Length: 260
Image 1 (cartoon, one colour):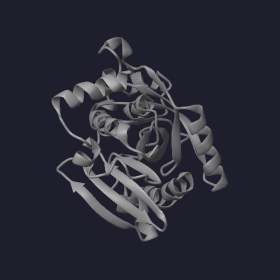
Image 2 (cartoon, helix red, strand yellow):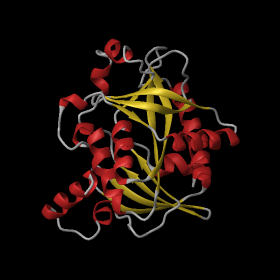
Image 3 (cartoon, helix red, strand yellow):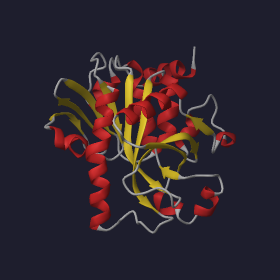
Image 4 (cartoon, one colour):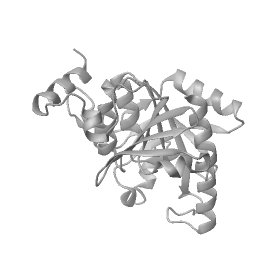
């Protein structure tokens, strides 16, 4: 029995349910969506608003939301997870029983080096797990696994880059770092940069590790929202926000359509 099967067995022993994905997010595990989109902070209209989407709320709770999104002939499951590696972990592990095998992470990242611009689309060549939730994705909880390197699958990276190239969208691989605190990351920037980190968020390491555990195909799409090396603040100017939003609203959905 693999680790995920053990986790499922123990979870089910304490939480009897026939379909936890449906109970929590309202998404039917038996539905073969073109893709399931996992987003820490973007509501579906923020991604698909320019494409006349039909957005069907399936479950709306205080800190997580589930939707079905129909754009043309494509039907997506959509999970708004909330920000943090813990929320990402608990959300993604519900997808183990889903028929859909194509999962796409879509979210903002901060840039840590000067050669990355606001609105750039990037993806991690690997992610440094500086978050606490990822420690639970091992047989034993051990601080020895803190800051492990979590690699993306080579075929996922290849297909993503090939798809973006066909669309004439520049997407580059970066060394990524996951943190548990946006507020505190700035105090620890020198330490984080010393690891070679170029981008940062709170969820990606847990996402990739979960996808490997549940054996799903996956892609990671990051849109750069700020850059501490260039003085582009997280709470930026209106001009900065417009640039980032244009990229999110045009490049991200085009890549999602092509991948699904």
